[in-house]
Length: 192
Image (cartoon, rainbow, N blue to C red; front, top):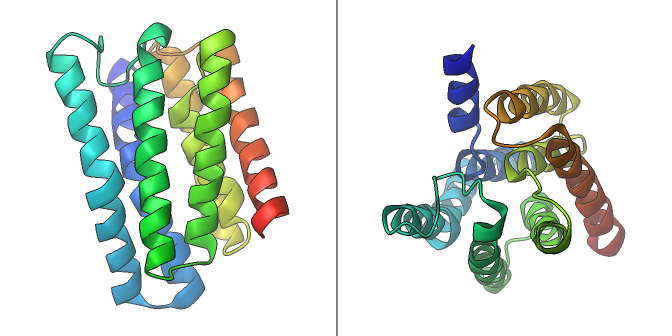
């Protein structure tokens, strides 16, 4: 079971889920393969790869205890870094005039990070693994109910794996669900 939980946690890491979700949302809403691949390339270049190397560097230098940044007190600098990258990514997408559900989902991710940052700072750690996949599930409802159902099942799997691996408590996983649903609702209310 431990190996299965690790597999789920790695394969459904936010750095994998984010570009996969953006590709799906873009392709399912536009049927434009080249545009969807461009979106993934931009996201990978501006957000995913810098985040990967930032976490890896901080893990290697001992500032982060592991790649998941499991220690609550170590997450502040990660949140600031992620917020800067996400704002940069949103700016690039606006400059390129890319809109629609992918940009709306990134706005939801921005709200997720801001809310999670404050909860993390003053209350408890929020499971970003859970928040990202639940947010993807909520947004996918508007494109494909089948995709949303699959993502809901995967969100349950991620939730289980995070608790099973003792990376999060049940409360932290529930906070991930609540933050994601709230962030998507705010994004659609303000920009949808």
